[in-house]
Image (cartoon, rainbow, N blue to C red; front, side, top):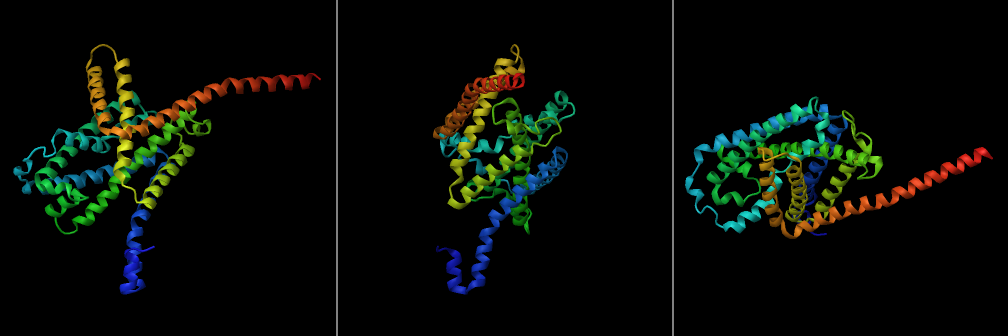
Length: 341
């Protein structure tokens, strides 16, 4: 196999090749390490995981605030022209991809049972999170466009560029730390919510029953967490080994999440009473979600396949249940007959 490491070895010897190899190995090692950290945090339960999440969120907000405020003197209003160089079709394509940046609200609902007073605390937490995230996203997006202009789309880390321009010095290293914090901050609640969801589905018969352990409030769903960790690691290895472009993966994932949102908002329309604010918001959310689903395009096939698997499993389980009940009844009859004999 030829690559930069091979060329470095031929030009400068084994030490240079080792340096190149270690640099390339840093990314997967970092990714696996972060997965291990998140997995261990969730193994100790929501109390430890929640404290870690609060720390990560605080650090990330501090870095975002530093990037925004340090960039204010470099704002150029001329960067708003042309406002939409790719037209509305470009905005639609970008929205389909950027859904990934805004999803995650649904993950906390899987942890509702962990709140002491869910009816009071969950709406408060959602409202506080909405305000903080909305202000942070809008502020960062605004300074990114007004400071970097067309250059914002040319780099992989606009946050690092903003910090470098506003603060200077070790801004790149700070941005790397921010990337790690951001990734951990996303993985931690998603793994916690997904593990609880898997256990709840096992309890309700939508997934194999052995996943149900840990579905109760305050319990740790270790089996479900192991499945989540295994699937995440498998995807990471597949992407790393094949070098596949992550954009299709993001669009397919967005299709799955938007499907969840479409079903959720449709359920809200049906369940919420009258014409109150909640029902109006549900209708608006449903319409917007349908538009974003259309923008995802062919990648909705993944969501359709997953939906088919779910419905197929339920159909198989419903056919199997009467047969299993009959077998249990036959076994009971045979046992009674044996005792009688």
